[in-house]
Length: 347
Image (tube, rainbow, N blue to C red; front, side, top):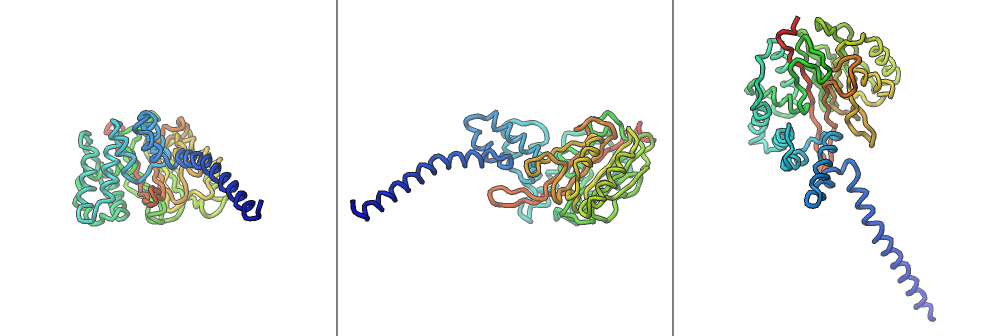
């Protein structure tokens, strides 16, 4: 056999081995990519024709884990007959991407439609003030600024409700069974708002300072007065996490806790501190690096809970710093949670 033929045979063997490897590896790789939790939209779309139940479950799970600030997953879930806020969220995120000429009108319509069939109580003077404060900051962040003055109360309430995926409640704090004695609004713009992007509003005041970190207020559940207040720069060092842990551990059982992130509060969020927050009924809902967490780097996060409540019963909302879909990055947005106190519970 000539040297040329030996080399040719060797190359044929190499190419055959490579082709066999590719034939096995490519489907495996495709499966792994498709079943990565972050690729839930592509997985759902691949299953819609053959297994609509699994496609729907994939969308529901992915939306819960990642809160994507883009219309497509909500629209697909709504098209499958899903009830609840998904259709309104699809409209909201579509409006955020609308051309400048129609964007303000689209956002206003999304806000109005969100509460179209809901009977809203007449807001107190405080609630109106808190809503206007949060809405003005939201307008600056989402670039509808001065137009915010022309929005009705129903449109403002609807849009603030949409940012938190249903984060405005009437009287009761989440599903804790505890009635809030005063109006409370908690706003977080996370990394998109910098140190100016947090509000913690009750009793006619904003208790959030213009500082980076996790702002927390402990509130008397009977009279609605703030009894403890702290801001903890968890980006700075681990001592801040220890200081916050002592702060939360010292809160009396049954007290109300309100929390908001300004800029970032993720770097030194320790497991012990997460456990302490879960003790207020908060839940690790976001998936960060394949791990359930309260929030990730520069996420928006706002919550109102009760010390001693079961995990997952608090009122909380969050948005990622960004979400990537088909090679495009969509920015997250501020979130709001709020309690409109019932008239018979206000001291």
